[in-house]
Length: 256
Image (cartoon, helix red, strand yellow):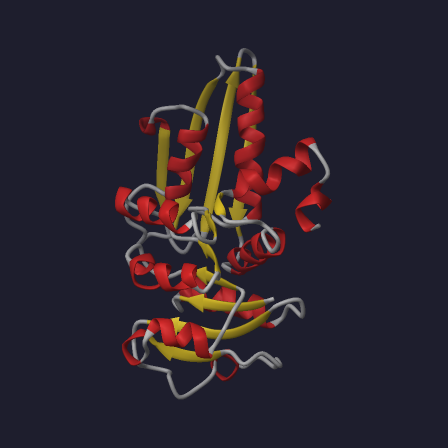
């Protein structure tokens, strides 16, 4: 499966590294805002041996529609910025390229764009694309259904420089129908990301915890999504759509 990656920050580099090491996928190119690094490949930059082309392009140097024609891919994985979807989305949809977005926060305008694009191509969006976090979300939702009156608190921990409340924590709160003031944030050192859901029952507690050890977890999650939406028709999907058959049906149906 041919992959185009948009965004090459810390998370983007980790994702690129995972793609380069997976023989089921080919990293065709990386698209970034800056003109820096245009003369080298991702393989050279990350010092990774791979048969993938992994060319680096700048948005400033290309016409996006011509780029998709000259360098075709089956799916785009987006680890860039909130406004990026406005620049590449329409052209990607017209070329029937599947869009996998891992942007943490989208505003109403961007969500509207995703819905519009999904009328033409397959669009997937998850604020946190790690498989473990989404497993936690699904399991937490099941437990809440079993015990709707249980007390719930959410704790999220991230590196010191991270601003705002974690988008994943907000998603957990929305999934469990609890107020955002039930989210407790911790900022310390270089914590990659940790989320804990505490269910307070009389005389006992249940804790669901997910901790990201490395940003490569974003890459394995993105490729898990790419593998399972490979044959999905147009529409807007999230992780629940992919995970539900694993809990309630045959997960292989997503691969048929």
